[in-house]
Image (cartoon, rainbow, N blue to C red; front, top):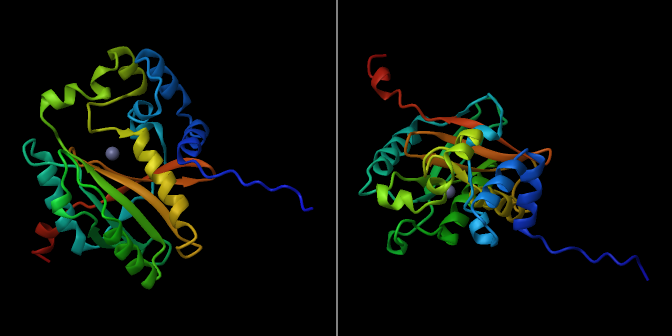
Length: 243
Ligand SMILES: [Zn+2]
């Protein structure tokens, strides 16, 4: 009989906690869980993770002119406390060729599936966006969503608002919506696992949150750690009119 290679089923939860530990996020997870008496996994994944705690690769990600407009329009919507929701979308492009750039943007939700504050990912739309990327031989797939500005009474209900000022200061935790959550990192881990066999071998899967203060950074996994790169979507259209 061959050696018993009982393969462990993949657990995005366990893998996320493992990578988080390797990335130096163990302290924030431990201390926030202790203070907030968190003992169930769902609440654990609500723990806010400030982007600054993740190692930064200083080279920025550039996006094509054609998608700067839509990204800036989306930013205007999520700044509005009355209108903003959590919208999922996908960015794809090639960052490993000469004119490294994100070229395509696709919304991955149907408006009829809009729940209270968030729009669920429609797997078919996501699949279409990914297929388009594969067809174009793209090497970068960024699964994105927005963190909208929400009314203050809703902000108060979120974990980021309940954490003590001491811990908030210690870890640089910002107000609700301006941090990642451990759940966002779990989404990256899950998609990275699900997509890696379907994409070109050189491809990188990233997760990015467009926040209402205009922060937009892509997080990915490299050497078993979370890393991040800023996405530059500054709209230069006003300047270009004069050229
Ligand atoms: Zn999120």
